[in-house]
Length: 227
Image (cartoon, rainbow, N blue to C red):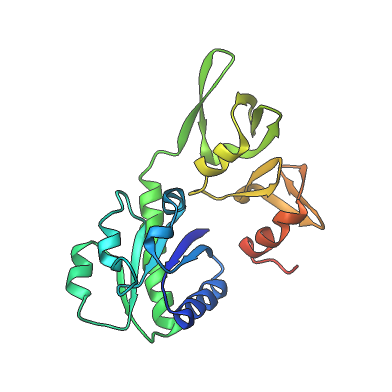
C-alpha cells in the first residue's frame, strides 16, 4: 500500500486526485492540505508520495519542498509548464500538467511505485527488540501481528512471541512503510500473512483477530474488498 499526501489549494483538483487515488487499489490518501505549513512533520515521514501543486498561498510548492529534509517521492500537479526545470532540479519524480487523464496519472504513480519498491528492497528489513535483557533481531517480513498488552506489545512471528515494553502506536509508525495495517485498537497485522477475512475477523496464520468497527472501513478499502 502506497500512502500519499495531496498539497493542492484548488478544490476541483483535490477532488480529481482523490477520485484517481480511490480508483487505484494500491494507493491510500492520508491527508489533503492547502498549505504546506499545515502538514504535520510526522505525516510527511509516513507518506510515500506527495502530490504537489506549485502556486500555493503562503508558501510556493517548490519552496516548501526545499524545507523537507527527507521528502517522499514528489509528483508535481500544476497548470503551468514553466516550473518544470526548477522542479526537476529538486528531484521530483514526475510533472503532471492540469488537466491530466487517469492514464497519465497511472503512468506517474506506476513509476513511483517501482522506485519505492526498489528503495524498500535496498533496505535490510529487520529490527531489534529488547526483552529479557537481550536484543533480539526480528525480520519484518516474519512478523505475523502485534498485539497490545497493557504497557507492552506482543510481537508474534512464526517462531516466537516476544513481549516488549512499548506502545502499539509506536509500532504502527515504525511499520507504516511496510504492509501492515491497524485493524483493532489492540492489533496490527501483516497484510501479506492474511489467510482469509470473514465478517469482523481476519485469520492470520490460523489466529483469528478481530476487526474493530472504527477500523473496518479503512481495512476493507486497503484490501479492496467488498464490504
